[in-house]
Image (cartoon, rainbow, N blue to C red; front, side, top):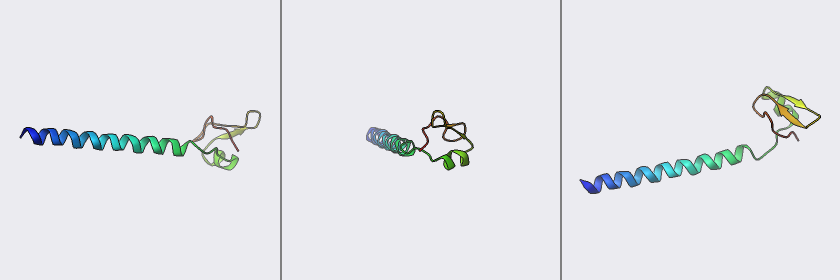
Length: 65
């Protein structure tokens, strides 16, 4: 009975660690590329040409290509 509990704890730990690594990889992949002016506007933002950044929307604060 004790071994089952230990095994369940080990499996749960490994599963949660795997989810954490997957989330970290996804977060870095989505923030790597700068949006185009069209993507900024499609995401609900406006392009601030003085600073070349997207203001508002999905890409708020990101540099625009």
